[in-house]
Length: 433
Image (tube, rainbow, N blue to C red; front, side, top):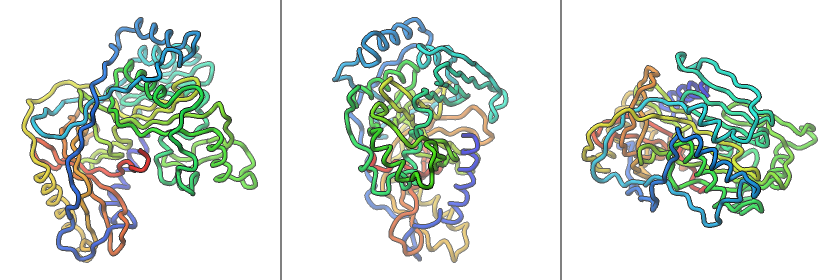
């Protein structure tokens, strides 16, 4: 993942200079940033969920035993269980800025929540390659499950999910084009499996995050993948005539992971992408965030990936973990219109730095203005930074005469100071919601 962050930094620089490959309309336009359809961000009808105190390990163990007793992991979950997440906000009124540090999960908390019923066979520690004075923890269980408790992130993979594509892969266009050439609906459905409903799976995922003390929103991207249809897709993408083995090397931004080709009915799963929150505020949905000085990139965005199967949580990845150390006075926000103007001025300045013969081919069309909180970590890779109230001015980017946008970029404006703080790209594909 550390390599991914560095790679994304290079990719972003190339995108800013070269237009990210194909896509951007309006050659020769006087105003490279046009406004069409920018509107208010809708506030979700949700409530703030409770969190378990990480120090109360005995309570956690009792909860785990209740959920994994004679009735199984689903025995204590009611059919009408609901997910309660942090409130979406409209950006009107006053908001504070939070001082934060990159954090790490307590090893004891991780073991009690994720490995309570698994025998740990190996525990290892090593210095973090990115933050040399921090230590990462790794747990391997006798059944093959494992946990990577890294500084700033957490990953749990159960044995049954080791050769499934990671949830992260399902949101990458290269993966989807390879496995689902006729469209995702051929394989992905809003279905209830025989072992639990989707709402029960959502409740189990939310309950696990509550125990870990991680805040989240309620606007999840949620879908189900059947073992039968996943098998058909894998054998179509990797035919036996060319790939005779049942394990294949797949395609992903993370490299070439090993996936199996054949799944059975017992491997019907739910996959969730969950927006992350902090101090009762939703964090951005952007996939990558870069400071305007290009000093740092958050490579996976502020969301959580979860896979739920017959045995319960079988995959969990929290890409960013922060701890609040303080906050500023709450101040009045600027308006959306003011934020759009800041974004326009910034983009014009960026285009002016390009070759005049090239810059006239760029057009940015405002398609959405959202309010959220955005991390801003110091560009020297310090563990300290801020979480900033932000207007995200999201634009489709066009190049030349092409009518399809090449990227969706966010010009992120501090909602209190009016300062341009970062650029982001790669927002959720709405058809997956």
